[in-house]
Image 1 (cartoon, rainbow, N blue to C red):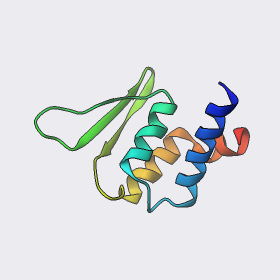
Image 2: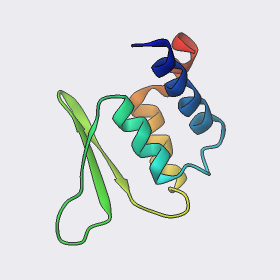
Image 3: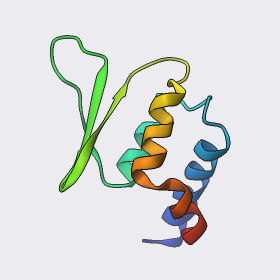
Length: 90
């Protein structure tokens, strides 16, 4: 991973960890893609995006504006172990 990529990822993780109530769907999407997850929106008009990565439990994030519900942000933080990632890499 290049230094610029690591820096961008660290900034995004810090922003999410410090302000869990104000995380936009766009930023969550960037974060999950940076960690290797691929999004898929089910058909039928559903607002829930499913992020999948080989060998890992899928993450479901409902599209919501202006900010995601805090419960979904906390689930992503826990599953990706963002606090540990930030301490070790940033």
